[in-house]
Amino acid sequence: MKLLDRFTGSMLGMAVGDALGMCTEFMRESDIPEFFGMTVDGYYSNPVLSYQPGEYTDDTEMAVCISESLLTCGKADLQDIAARFVEWGRSCRDIGNLTRSVLDRIRRGEDVRDAARAEWEATGKISAGNGGLMRTAPVSLFYFDDTEAMMKASRDICRITHYDPRCVLSCMAQNVLLWGLLHGNSPEEAYELMCDSLADSFNDEEFDEAVTLGRERPVRDMTLAVPGRSGYTYLCLTVAVSALMNYEDFRTPIVEIINKGGDADTNACVAGALLGALYGEQGIPQVWLDELSGYSYISRLGRSFYERTGEAE
Image (cartoon, rainbow, N blue to C red; front, side, top):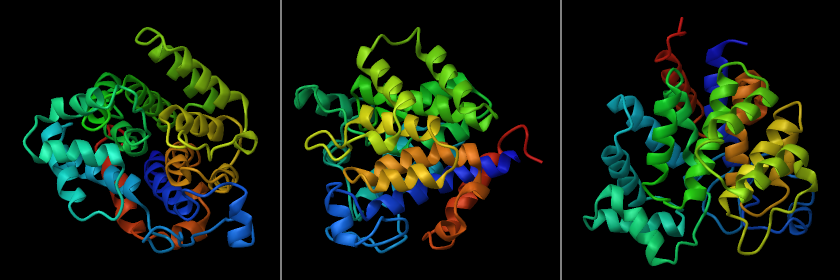
């Protein structure tokens, strides 16, 4: 498989998963077949959201902000990324509560490196949502040739809005997995690379349990619409690892994820970025690409990341 196909596949897989999961976000698993009358395997509207079928949500919109900043600045410029987040937040149709609160702090003049920590501490140091994880994939694509810089940027960009160490670790894990896949590693090799890369930096039993569960249990055997926990960063990471390790195509795990409800768009978005890198753009069902709003632009971002690599033809 050509490297370009992995780059565009990862960006498009992220957006496709997001747009597919949008229609079942916030729903209970048992309500989905009753509401839609079938297994959901395409783009539909959501009864409580303003997006149209085929449109992606804030997950991909924030990833686009990061992508545009990285490509424009040539580095992880936290001030520039935060400014893009703030500007996006003025007119976005959906935004996470924590992200909104932190961006409000930045808008009022708090330092980009302090705002998320201040909000985390003010709310009891308990918030560990998936809002950092959902947008992190472009970091791995940008730093394809520099793993050390990729790890640092994964941490720093997450901390613009999500300071909790669990959020940071999730982003680093996702991007190591993605980095391995982009370099042609098998899922097993990418998983081992993730474990080895993070072993000396963290000692988090819950993280170990999350990724181990993902490695061993397919999505179909999970409950993802969990009140008060559906948006937990480690749950999202578990789903992504499961999609990568327990399936042999792009479509099957994505369909299973979106029919589980809960934070379906983010779960499918994060998993889609990994699966897209593994199977390439060619592995994503063509009908999903054809009906994705913004397909051309997302694909072009993937190509722009690829053209920065030392392997671009």
